[in-house]
Each structure stands twice: as structure tokens, then as C-alpha cells.
Image: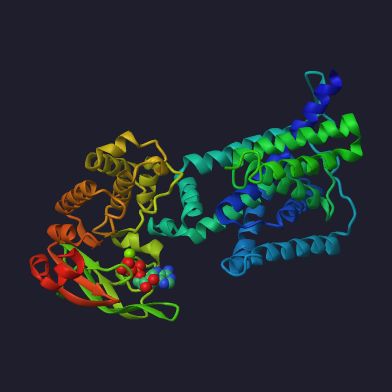
Length: 286
Length: 238
Ligand SMILES: Nc1ncnc2c1ncn2[C@@H]1O[C@H](COP(=O)(O)OP(=O)(O)O)[C@@H](O)[C@H]1O
Ligand SMILES: [Mg+2]
């Protein structure tokens, strides 16, 4: 029974974090029809930023997530202005290849500057603490990251659904020309959406650095899972992404515990293949 | 008409190499209802789009309230006091009626003004109050058209441009919608109207312009146009 609770808690904690990473990707896709292949490397950038803030300036991840969230908002908005915007309306593959190029650049930049070594912040404020949830032991850094991910996803959802800015974002996604006629500067909306997408991984990356090692490849697995989550959840749907992310987290942790650790991602991608063959628009897509 | 609110002077518009509008001049005085009529594909929407900033005229100029507005981007035009209700309504399909109206007043920051305008919209089209929380796509064509007009009014424009209101509506509804246009005009909004329902449009307009393959071929008061055999034969099937 304790094992079961542990597996569930582990799965949900990971799932919530996947949800936040995927929410950013899904938002950008939903509004702009652009798959941001550099999303995982943005996560990596946030983690490095948080790592350096911690190791050089002694700022704890429980605080530095604010800085990394803001940093990634800017980085992502600038990436849109400098790279992505120039490709939109050209060949269909252009934005995809451009963001792919950006991801290779970021990864190799960090490899070159920071070496491929794993870097882990020691003695963070929450490290070593655990709480007991129905017999499962949850490390506090992970738990806080997961809970905070849920809060950020909810805030993002609220922004999109309930505020005038959010309606402007939705309007731009539905009919950009009509949105322009309302006085909405759709270029600014696109920049904002890219910024928000980056901010999601900025916040996630900030918290995760409290317990995960940083290295140039760290974003790869997360972005792969985020793509699966977005596809399963139905492109562009934030609640869909959250449900799919929790499901993926659970599948991963159940397969890892009850079958074998080495098959956990096999199970995740097998689930993805199975669902996509039956429902190409995802579990929660239209 | 140098004191006109809207002055379109000799504009030509192209889509790539194809010329859609050639040397069109149209004046609209403050408080007027003016109709542009013409066959499908004759360039009516292009004229409106060039005022709305969606198409940039290659030659000629557009003035509004004496100010040069040629080439002003679409998202700035509404700030000048011009609102364009595009052909086919172009509502935000998955947003509610209320959210659509809110977006029509996107430039307005004062909450009280927005709420007041929403109330005015509901007074003009009571059915929208009932539908306020429904998504736009769940409404009938007539209701959607009313919502589109209401959304166009939310910015408190001086000039409202209405492109093919009657598209896909039953004749009885067309009459009702055009009646509301008259009411809007009485409240002080100048109207430029594009219509294929020529008789109905000219009945509410003071003046009209007839466009054929991108050129104004005739202009005059509605009485003159309605009395013209040429217009009656070409556009009213008589
Ligand atoms: N976006 C566009 N791209 C290319 N050609 C267009 C476009 N919009 C309109 N046209 C062409 O321009 C001409 C005028 O169109 P339009 O102004 O829509 O006419 P109307 O509103 O009178 O039906 C037509 O020949 C039409 O095919
Ligand atoms: Mg037209």
C-alpha cells in the first residue's frame, strides 16, 4: 500500500512539472501554430541561470525562480522578435527549423561555456526535507515545485480565460485580422505569448534547480515529454495539457516501479503512439 | 465636398499585380448614410479595407476628419474613430457574446464606459442580452450579424463601415438589421455601407456610389440611383 501511494505521489509530482513545461509549449502552439523546438533549451537556460544565481550570488531557488521567470520571459520574447517572427508566413517548416537551430545554438553555447558536467546546487533551503503524504514520502523541493507548477498553470489559465488581455490573445488566435480591427496589436500579442511560454519554463526551471542537476542536455527529455503531453492533451488546450501531463507522470512512475525503471519512457511513448493512432487530435482535442 | 468626414481621393489598390480598385473617390459627410453598390468582385470590400488599414492603396489618399490616414495600420484605425464590420462578420467564434463586445471596446480603458456601451448594445439588440454568455458560434446568422454590428459600435466610433450585412440573412431579417442601422445613424454615427441588396440599401442611404470592376461608374442621391434604369436593370433585376 505504501509503495502504491509512493508511486502515485511521485507520478503526480512529476506530472505537475511536465504540465507547466508543456503549458508554455501548448500556449505558443495554440495561438501561433508554431512548435517551439527550443522550449527544452529554454528550460535548460533557466536552470543554468538559477544555478549561477545560487552558486555565485547565494540566492536560493525558492527566490531565484522570480528572476529566471522574468529572464525567460525576455529571452523567449527576444527569440520571437529576432528569429521566429522572420520565419512566419514563409515556408511551413521555417519556424520549426529556426527554433530547432536556436535549440542547437543554446545547447552548444552552454556546452562550450559551462562544460558538459552535471552541476547541482548544494544546501538549498528545502533540500533534505521530506513530508509524509498518505504513507508516501515526498521530498519537499519536488513537492513545492509541483504545487507551484499547478499554481502557475491555474494563473495562466485564468489570464487567458478571464482577463481582457487573455481575450485579446484568444481573439488573435482565432482571427488575427479581425483582432487587428479591434485595435489589438497582434504583433505585441505574439511577443507576449512567446514571453509567457518562456516564463513557464523559466519558473519551472528555477524551482527544479533546487533538486535537479543542470547540464546542457537537461532540456531534451523534458521537451520530448512536453511534446507528447501537448499532442495528447490536444494542441493549444491548457487544461488538456495538465490532464495529459498528470497521466504521463503516473504512467511513467507506475511503469518504472511495477515493470522496470528502464521501461518508464517506453511506456510513456507507447501510450502516446496508442492514443495518437486512435485519436489523432489527442485525448482532449476537438 | 471638402468638409467631408471621410474623403477617399483617387485611390488604386492592388493584390500582387492584380488591380482591384482604380481611381476611386468617395466622400462621406458627417451624419450621412452612404451606400456603395456593385456586383460581386467589383472592389467594394477593397475600398473599405483600404480605409480600415487592411489594404494599403498604391496611389491616392484617404483623409478622416481632415487628417491623412492613408496607410495607417489596421490596429490604429479604430483609435481614429473608424470601425469596420467586415464581410462575413468575423466574430471570435469560441468567445462569448459579452467577450466579443468587450474586445470591440479594447481601446477603452474606463470600465464604466464599457459597461454603458454594452448596455446600449443590449438595448439596440435585446436578443444579445439573452445570448450574452453563449459563444458566438452557437448563434443564428442574424444574431451573429447583430453581434458584429454591436461589437463594431463598442469603440464609440464616429464612422461605422458595414460590409454586406445582408449576406446569408432572410429578407425579413435584412429589413430589421437595416432599421437598426438607421437607428444607429440617428444616434450620431456616420455610416458607410456596402450592400448587394441594392434597393434596401438605397432606401436607407442618402447617397450612393456604383462600382464596376474597380471604378466608380455612377454616383448620386439615392432617389437618382433608384430612378435610373441602368441601376435598376443591372442591380435590381428590373
Ligand atoms: N486577398 C485577396 N487576394 C487577391 N485578390 C483579392 C483579394 N481580395 C479580393 N481580391 C480580388 O479583388 C477584387 C475585388 O474584390 P472585393 O473588393 O472583395 O470585391 P467585392 O467586395 O465588391 O465583392 C476581386 O477580383 C477579388 O477576387
Ligand atoms: Mg465584398
